[in-house]
Length: 190
Image (cartoon, rainbow, N blue to C red; front, side, top):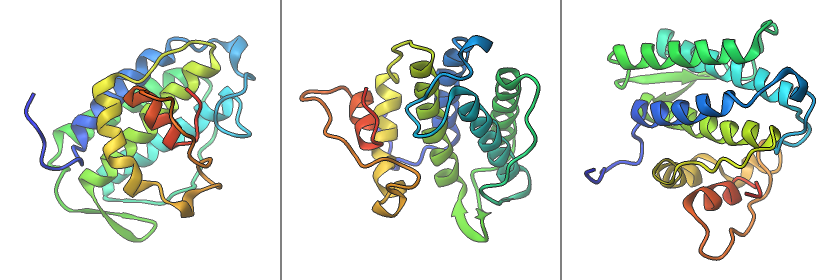
């Protein structure tokens, strides 16, 4: 694998995050929907609803080059199936279009497509880890994916995002893996 000059690998990073998270979705059963997640105040069902909304927003960003955050849709009957379908559609749409060019308006502010899809990859992958954890399974993020996400996390998640959207960062374990370091940065205990 060749070294990248930019950490914002966009669609490629999103593809790897979706692949990881699709594997984690297989752990979800109806009996686990009320289990707590690493996301403060969310049970597994709330996390899945958030993921479904986020994937729809990322799709909208690629399709119409604009997205408004914090817009929720009604709850689908099959949350896991909806997330899988939206992830596939999202990846297909962002891959087919010449979508890595130009800006996307996020709440009226311009964001480059590679930064937006890389940020989406961070969210998809970390929430995949969250749902595996809620299902009682240890499923670390793959090393290469975690390393690439760790490169983009600091400019995306600032002190202004804490403690509202992210918990304060934790100290990673000594000699911790990239997955453990990323999760600690996001306030999660691996």
